[in-house]
Image (cartoon, rainbow, N blue to C red; front, side, top):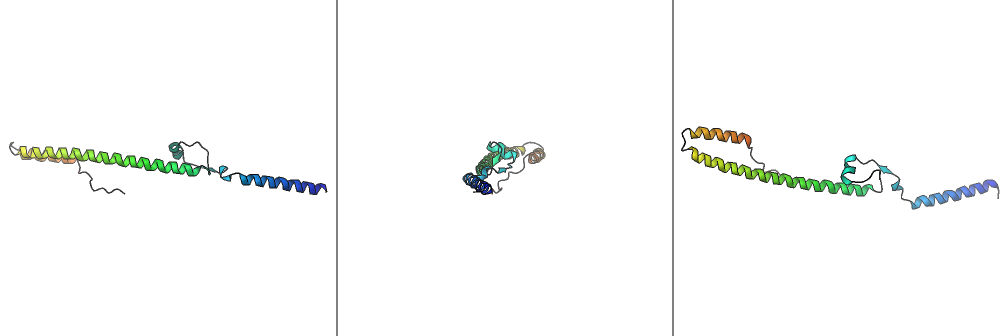
Amino acid sequence: MKKEHKIIFFVSLIAVGIMLTLQACDLRSFVKVDVPPDVIAATKVEPPVTLKEVEDVREDWIFYVESNTKRLDESIAEGEQTYATIHQIVSVGLDTASTASNSIPYGGILFGALTGITGLMLPQPKFSRKKE
């Protein structure tokens, strides 16, 4: 065999070995994905994130968003219930004051001023808000 044929044979053999090695590797682990810092902070993943890991990061992010949205909705519902209770108590107090104002001189004027001030401070609760 000539020297040129030996070089071509060994280069071909090395190229086949490299291709077989690369075929066994997961090339997705070499591709880096630019993940936003907020997602990294929420999912507690260590950068750099590769294409191989990005699906797990995405699932963690979706869980994070959905669970925090659910907690926020529950907090809003509790706040609206508290507001509705306070509004009901104030309404009962105004009804009582309305009944009592009839026996006081100029009670109607005082009651009108009291309800006007109360109406400014306490808008009607939003019971009809639809959740999507």
